[in-house]
Image (cartoon, rainbow, N blue to C red; front, side, top):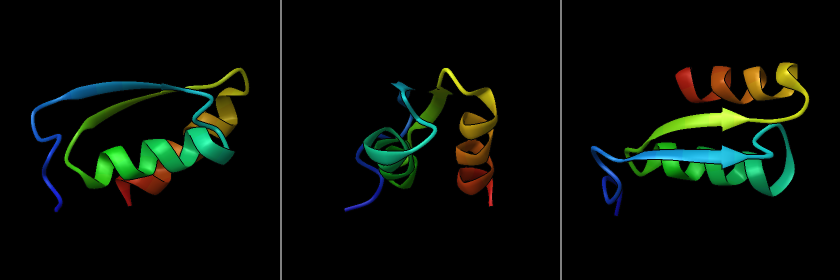
Length: 53
């Protein structure tokens, strides 16, 4: 059921690890553009790299 969030934008806080990262990855799989936020910017960047790859 991919594509349910096509053309949507989501902001995920705590996207650097754990539930936040899993949420960001799932939303991206569903077609959403994801804004990944985390207090540790390098961890958020890792999540973005996973999504982009």
